[in-house]
Image (tube, rainbow, N blue to C red; front, side, top):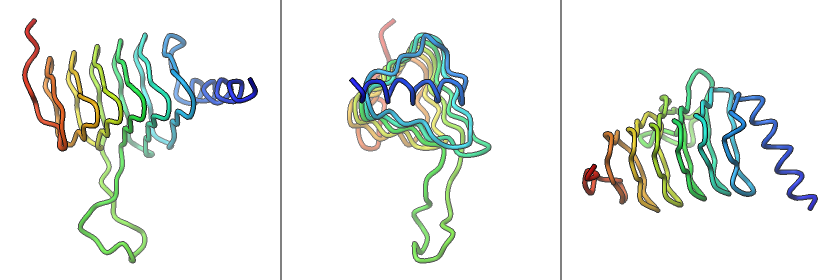
Length: 153
């Protein structure tokens, strides 16, 4: 009971800090929103337990309306650059806005890299690593995520 209260209070702080709509649903425990950037979320969206959204100062994560984000999903605006000596501080990073369009379904354990734009009405399969833009109405998956096919609308 106390644990549930803790998460409700924490999620209320996220709503205030990032101006998250009341129709957005935090679907479980240990969801983390952090950073001094912006997190913009559309109405009637959802995020599952143990997921995280990181927004660095000056950058934004934008999530559309009616988006279902499953459990253990990670969405970032900043990551370390690979081609560097990790003994030398400060570390060099890549930073960019990250966008998920309206009516998307993001499967469990998906990683969405900084700078990625996922179009409207897309499905990202479970365990995928999204490193490049995904066009509207795409179904994709894999490591790295690739388009499997376009939806038959």
